[in-house]
Length: 579
Image 1 (spheres, rainbow, N blue to C red):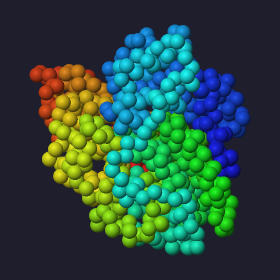
Image 2 (image 1 turned 120 degrees about the horizontal axis):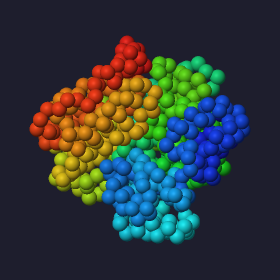
Image 3 (image 1 turned 30 degrees about the vertical axis):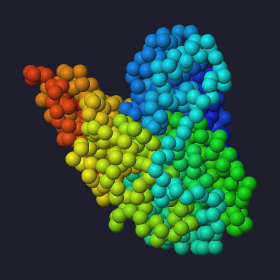
Image 4 (image 1 turned 90 degrees about the vertical axis):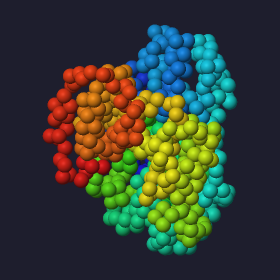
């Protein structure tokens, strides 16, 4: 793909494959050959992409293809079972008449709306109940076209309960751009650096420094990318920003382009948020018509435009180099770093990749000044943080706090009672017990990309941890052996433990395997996959111990033997192996 594609990127491989999947309900060999020729891409590349992404299939799916979330916050296994029984279909199968297929999928970013599902990979139904499941079954059995289904089912609200630094004041489109258009790009970068803004996606790297490095990097052209692939279970803040604050985000992207000298930007939208695509494209078009995008922005010698590429179900594409690979119409495999995207990113050119929330913050900083921003937060964590709160609480949704707020204050605000545990930062983050609730949310203490999942005392923490292990095993891209093999072995061990067939020996093997996966995996998915298990063993040992058998058993497999390939293939001294 080249940057000269049309603004809506209709000919991007992911978009072409999506249309074919919708048309034929699968991607055939013939379709792969035709797409390969029409896009002038190697057949192996097209086939590899089809097999990599969850939303593409080589065998037909049902006319009504349902993916039911299995997330601890927006999933419900009882409702899934009920749906399958009433439709006479097994999970993972297509019914013999081709009418319907039902399967599970990872979190779809609807954790504030309860049990949810994806319909035909493009529509979302939330707030599922037994009654609504019965209504869905009736509509499917009668082969009612989706256009005739109740429109209110597809409405997705924001659930913003607390507004702070970014969300309180309404934003006027173009106001931040008008504030920078007479300033130098260096001056803009210096202000972002002075504000202390760090990446809101979780890594916490200085945004201004990233822009400075990108601007100074040698290349034929520079690119801006907004990472809107928030696939971490329990996270949905970017969904809300794009739904109600898209102008603020696009303004931040345009400011970034001005700062680094870019003419082209991309918003990489997670596949589960496809329902936002038409509205987002309409917002972009409105900005073009009002002189805020395109050629000679605001009458100045400044050209920049944005196009949207929609993912197809791959958690690993939230990692910036994997996202870039996906933008380049390839499988989303994380790259070995260095080089970093700021010097060799999209198409090998200098690229600034920022999170949705980060870009929204840059526009507000330019509008109000660095002093306004850094007067909030802590000494090492400036500004505010949007939290996606879900689980066992009275008021799930979006909460914005200045950095430094205690976890307990958040729990009080959301109406969480009898809390047993909090998972902060999603499954890749930390699992905390009550004596940690006095800690503060900040880069220097509890760092998070935004997910905060609450588990009351009645929840089975072993089942929760097992769910997280299933997530990582499913989402591993398979590139490196430690993650590909290790995550599946961790899930296998957790499944054995949950069924009451494990011994103390198995616990020791879980610790051993967790250390190997964390140490030797290629990217952040693998290095964090064992976090909930290790935190569980440390903070909730009783949840593990009460499931153990009373007698010792021989191990069912030899971990050292199964991971010997991983040790041989991984160079411990290679910094790229510890992403």
